[in-house]
Image 1 (cartoon, rainbow, N blue to C red):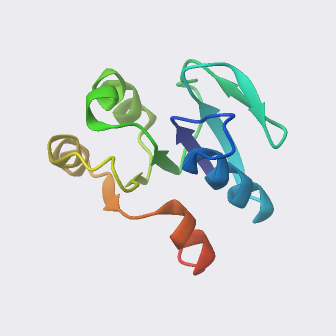
Image 2: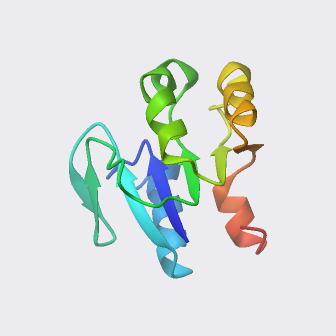
Length: 118
């Protein structure tokens, strides 16, 4: 089961960085996309989505305004769920996802991982 971390950062103070670290610790397969290329815990950060991947979960670390550019791409990936981490809540996009049969979950990836609810 592969997780796409959208809004990935090489900055260790960012929650996306911490999420990649915890996902790796728990041996999840990861794809990371951010605004700048880089590497986090051995995972490359790309600047564009690979729409050929089979993605189970999208973990969002982009504010609602920045999400808009990714709406169609995320929907085309047809993930099982999209996690809206704190600060990324977006009622419009959440509704679009639900209409396509994709679970939209307001949660924190880090908390889900820490409590074995991921």
